[in-house]
Length: 138
Image (cartoon, rainbow, N blue to C red):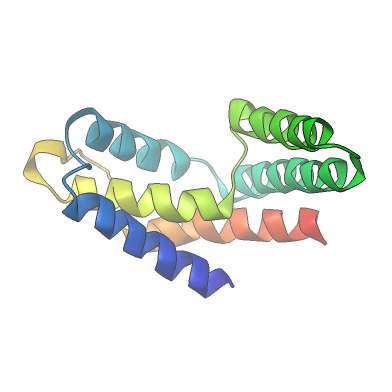
């Protein structure tokens, strides 16, 4: 599943690029997100991954316990909105956002100094984030 997520996410990032959507403000934001998410240390990303998946598991639990559609919706929306608002790290989301930023950073218009490469993307974010998500999901 992990490899399938990264392959599918990179494919979708490439599709976004080929559609001409990774331009202007989107590309600048993607590069900014890439630099920000890869600038934290391993332990911080690991803890953010734990916080994220704890809330994702809470959303799944609340949804499964709710008796009606409104309860299921509320049970999902609040924990997921919380992890997004708090800035926790979610591997499937990062597996798309970081390659999108990397692709944008290869263009002359969006190059910035000290932009993380593929190795840094995995070592600084995707691996610790995955470990944190896995820890909280078990």
